Length: 299
Image (cartoon, rainbow, N blue to C red; front, top):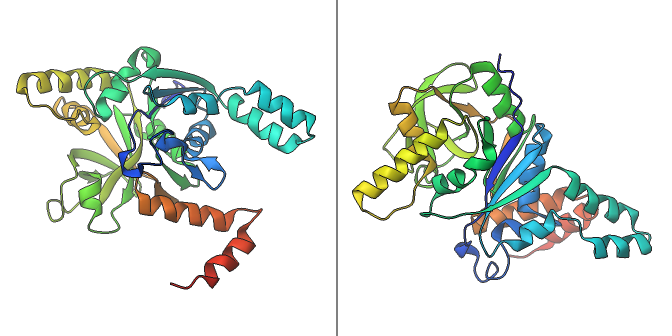
């Protein structure tokens, strides 16, 4: 039984969001709204649902809006209070009180491994969760609860959240894990292939969003950096490279299929629009009127 409580989550959020330009010219893609709540708030709420206390967000110079969102807006609070808008005031305060928020600027070569590396000093020697800031998974239990439950069950150096491949293009969009099944949910990973392409693997375990790492990931990322320097070929440093180094070293890596789930890839314009529509149709304040509007559209 793993007894060390997992208290920290790292959210890389330093990308430029070029696929959403010009909307992301002056605001982070992670702050794009899903009806009335930004994408990254769903990500934070997922982490908090599993008992995460410290949220470490890896940002860039153009991401101050994220810091402001999770801060205490004194003037806004006073205006809501003076206007008698208690429901809105309670929600604004809840956002700031969900967790302890820490921010670190990303520096170094581009890539997902670099973002994780930048959080090293704040993570320390504890296991931690990594969640991307522009996608999330609806699940029961929540994604982070399932990752922690899998870690408590099998241990290992990393637990990678997975969903089943649903269409051929998934092989060109996501990393794919191969290996042997431990049970109906957990796969012991033998290989992680970054965007292998159609027909290159028979595995249907897409690693899309949500990872639980022990601090063993940091020496592996350091090896990725050293290998990149020796090759003298500029490229992004990917988390999958670090995971494969841990596999080379004989460390146990597992993939846990996130069950009862729906994945929302909000870094993709079409999938983002689908998510907005789905959440609009579930929104208590507007779902009936919105459903009538959708049904009445002529295409």
